[in-house]
Image 1 (spheres, rainbow, N blue to C red):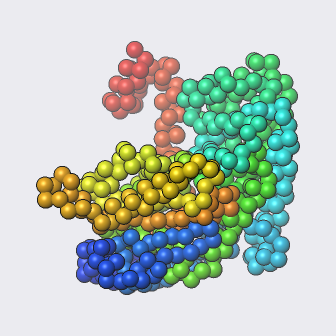
Image 2 (cartoon, helix red, strand yellow):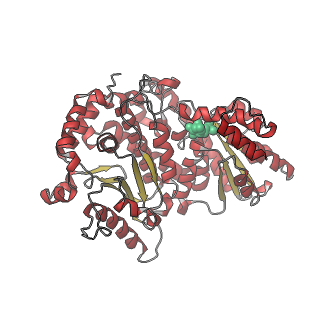
Image 3 (spheres, protein in one colour):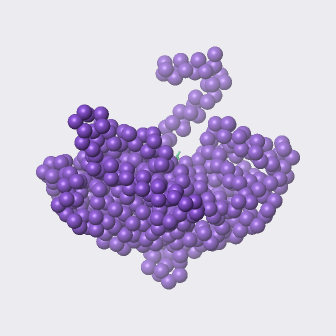
Length: 519
Ligand code: F6P
């Protein structure tokens, strides 16, 4: 597979020239005035998602050159390598085949590479078993509470999706998500539940994560102390380490494979809370929506490929304009947890400073991803977006049709989203200074017809492939996360010292804090 790092291409040099000549000073107001077809030319359609890119600091020539960059970097070849099941996660010697978790099989499976096809058989076997189990739990009215114990990818995806599909959730059951080792979290949930009516899902790819295992052991101890019986009925493990789950004492397990990264795992057994919440039909529609986006990413030409074009925009802003963050602005309360989910997806995947060969990169990679429900953000931090000293590209996420019938609300919500994007672009002249808004602040507008399982699936897959493409352009491995390991090791070293007080070998600051915590 030929991957060429973005900074070693001809397109990169051409983009540098274009940026200096026009990109740096491109004015959106003038660009719209000069070209009545700008909106149509810079809009993209993909399954379930419409994207308006016209309020970004680009024009036709910049787009062409960015697309040339993707071609020269070998993005298409890299993409095919992922879909062929090659070891694209090179530092862990693993494939990254989360797309397979949503593949429908049937005739379309014939196009898959033989190894990938073989894995699909297992994927469907686990999916069918997991959905049958979800159905059984849904029908069991004596189970009123489902507690998911997991962290990172074993928490954020299910939590985000259950909230996003709230209108479809089985309201005979409450769903709780416990992630932190901070005991306040688990004890707050345990105060609300009873052992005989609770199902605990211990969700961990590795089944070794300290936070999850501590919470799982505490939940099991609480269950027994409260007179709970029948662990097999009240505990279920979602893991690729089935043996460790058995040793923990759980017999009901749903497995998955090392080629499913934690932050790409909501489509696997890790999605069980989603399946219990909304049922197998909706879970399958979520998979179908994601698969439709997979097919778009796999087959659409680079120039009209939505994940590719969004990733190119990320590179344009990060590496040429130097914008260090990107804000997400969802205009739908169901997307409450989406920024948190995408923070892990983008920053754990592409927050890297070396290329695939371990060479230090001479350019920055993933921006900081941040934001919250925009209706609230407008009354909090949007001030900085309009008048702060940094330019922060913002991504509006809106939904055309809603699932409530309260009159007037939705138009007000949509009007606010449109107005914010407009205000950021247009700005406002004021000689006095304080009311002056420079404008020309870029934004992308993503629009779903409706927030359904299928459109949610497509939206998440869109982001997954965008992250893959950006990582591909930057020449990094988007599928490992070595940076999180050192802190885990050091925490293991520090934990016993909190009891013993031994500060031998610690730096003066850590030793001082340890003394203070023990005094
Ligand atoms: O510490 C980071 C991480 O490994 C994430 O990548 C992962 O999603 C999370 O921890 C949880 O891991 P596990 O599912 O193995 O408990």
